Image 1 (cartoon, one colour):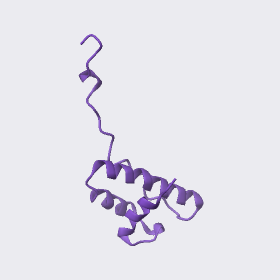
Image 2 (image 1 turned 120 degrees about the vertical axis):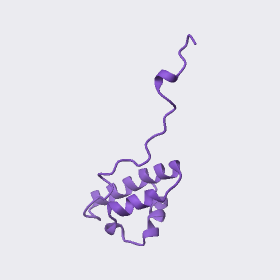
Image 3 (image 1 turned 90 degrees about the horizontal axis):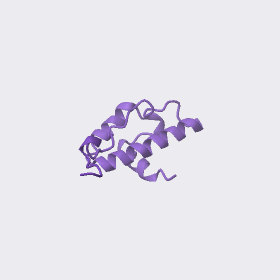
Image 4 (image 1 turned 90 degrees about the vertical axis):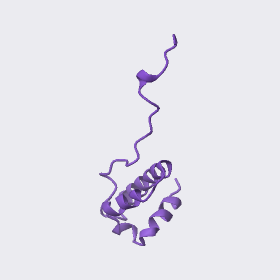
Length: 86
């Protein structure tokens, strides 16, 4: 998996990977306006921090307890869809 895009986005904080806090990540997502971009970055950052934590390169994973700030978009409730008779 390629993490270059996610890491480039994170470099705006100018911190080593081990110094990021949950607040830094939340601020990053608050400044990301587009839903699709934010959702993609969340997925990448989650993998980056998980992999670095598993390798022992960082002592804590700041994103591990975060929920996705960009929930999937829904196309309406299933009751709103047409059934085959309609």
